[in-house]
Length: 422
Image 1: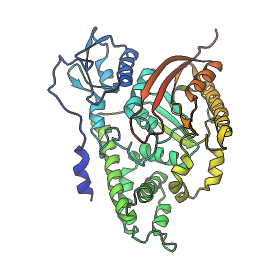
Image 2: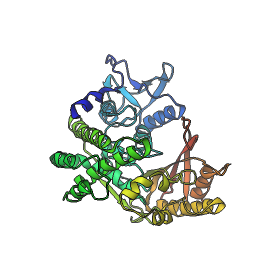
Image 3: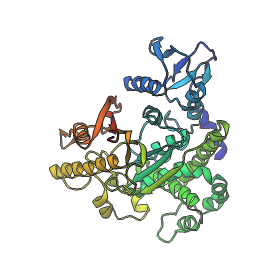
Image 4: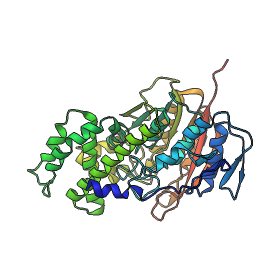
């Protein structure tokens, strides 16, 4: 199975082209939306690049020689070429075991709804001026996209989420690279316990061997592999045993890809601190965070507890108790909206409290439709954020394509916290 999985690694590869110094700044082939072009230009400006757009918006011409081309090559998200050399990101995205362009390295692990676009997050981290050693906060860490992209750029990340499932998958995506040899050591024993009758009441062999793994990061990896198979079984009616074996191989290969790309590009990874917590009461000191990149839950329109019920039950959680803790899933009708808004007020106040003066908070949010009516969440977020001291510096429309999407449009809101009074 591992050998078969190796063959799909090249399913998606960004097109290579003859290297030429005349190719000063070339966008990735998959950059196709207006918001991506806007972010690409903001990214260059934030990194001090003087440029003009040429060749049907596909290439950019440098107006002045950049002071540090090597740093640009290391950091850029929307450009595959600079000064005739491929960027680090060009090589990173080629480490992909899936059929989705955005699910390279460990990003694909677990089918979580409402995932960030990784390329967008990398660009936003650059746009708000975060550098190696800085710390970014995502108080709604979700599937861990911010954590992975920050880690790749050498930026430290604190990830908080009320959902234990979100914390688990985010940890697995960022911590498994540190324990790959131990993961491989446990593989044969784990597979020996996977049988067709796994879910019979008297058969807990797989659970027992996972629980017996002493290293928490290795234990989390195999627990996540089980949950991916549980999801495939519940959502796609796939045979658990086949799904477990296939996904385990792909997960191992993806972690190996991550290890390889770190070595190949000599990356200095950022530190990651992911924990269960509440965005309404962050366990962080005042003025301690260098930047925030996050997307609050769309739980008015999407019930995250129900959506991931099979995984949460497998983890042993009481769904009724979790529902009382989650933002946006309590109450019905107008009461549900009111509770969501009050929770978001507290979350915004906490973001403002922990962010350093003069730094930026990026909030990706959209207006959901609930009971046939559009809920003006974007306007609410902007109004309240400015009321407590944030200043909105950018508002970028992001259209979402797809027949089954809960949202049709999001807004990328970039806020700045005021400087200290002198």
